[in-house]
Image (cartoon, rainbow, N blue to C red):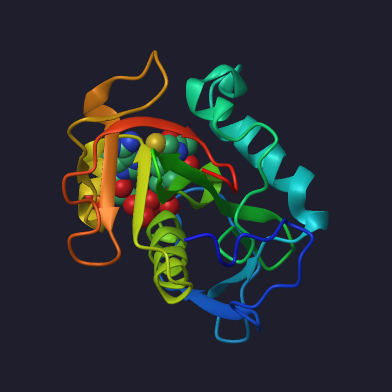
Length: 204
Ligand SMILES: CC(C)(COP(=O)(O)OP(=O)(O)OC[C@H]1O[C@@H](n2cnc3c(N)ncnc32)[C@H](O)[C@@H]1OP(=O)(O)O)[C@@H](O)C(=O)NCCC(=O)NCCS
């Protein structure tokens, strides 16, 4: 589906208000301000234009240098991320604690979401924030009418969110096929879909 595929500047229809999240587990590293009850509070919002470089800085911190040389980035060139599904989590002091982005892609005539990058600041890792970003955005994707999501990542992490290996779905090389994972948002949506993953275009 192509609906909801506005650019990052478009008004956001999902997550109309900020969601105040109580990250109950305390991080073993670092510290942050707490709310009145002494809890760390993370605010999750849809990414907006002004968030772009803060999120890029987080990705630069969390990924190895040269991340943009990865073949998956060629699927993102000159394509807008999916507004409303890209989320930014900020700490009490406004620091970006985590972020997730999505791009539309195609396998032949079939449309799908490409999940990623997703990253959580090292001082917040292990608190469940990565899982929260993934789960909240997948709910939003389902509500927006998307049928299927794929990603390139570590199966031991993404299995817990229902992602499994996509046999016959080929990312641009070089990509380890064992890291090409998918999840259905509509039952049967991946079905027998096979073929090369290509950059999204309105005409298909
Ligand atoms: C991967 C990442 C987003 C997870 O975020 P997070 O907030 O730390 O994750 P959560 O708190 O939701 O989950 C933590 C659990 O995931 C596990 N986990 C984290 N990364 C993992 C990986 N690459 N493979 C397997 N398990 C992993 C942790 O061991 C932990 O397991 P436990 O619950 O059994 O203790 C974060 O570690 C990160 O930003 N890493 C660097 C960037 C990156 O690799 N992004 C993903 C690209 S595939």
